Length: 157
Image (cartoon, rainbow, N blue to C red; front, side):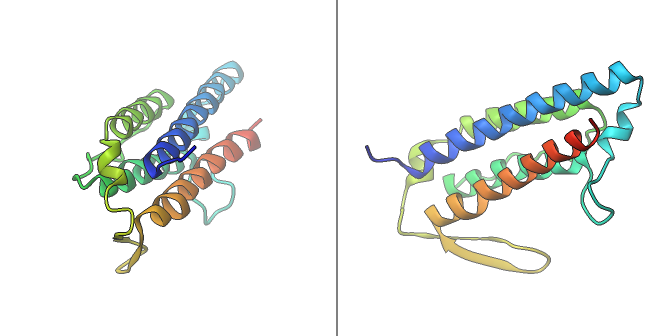
């Protein structure tokens, strides 16, 4: 069975976003049960130089929306970083899931031998083959930030 970049990417990203939604729901419930202001959780970091929980979710959703939009040849929908509650983060995940699922799989898979150039840090870009970009840059970055979302909430109980 042959798999396409879009089939692998959409399945993996969808799974990451569903898992993140689940751990965010548990985190919100945990904070509420213990009478802890959810801002404590949303601003928690594993280390002082790491991003807080809210930013981890924002980055994970940005990678999916921007990365797959880039491969599909469309301008990505803007997801402003304005979330300040668990509910707003859940809404962001839902919106990102809908955007990614709505992209044209054939467009994502087009020109498999082509390359994609993308931002890679401040004032830097990288160019990778399209499939490599999806499988070795987009998906692993989402996975990392999904894992950090889990780790932050696990650290809080």
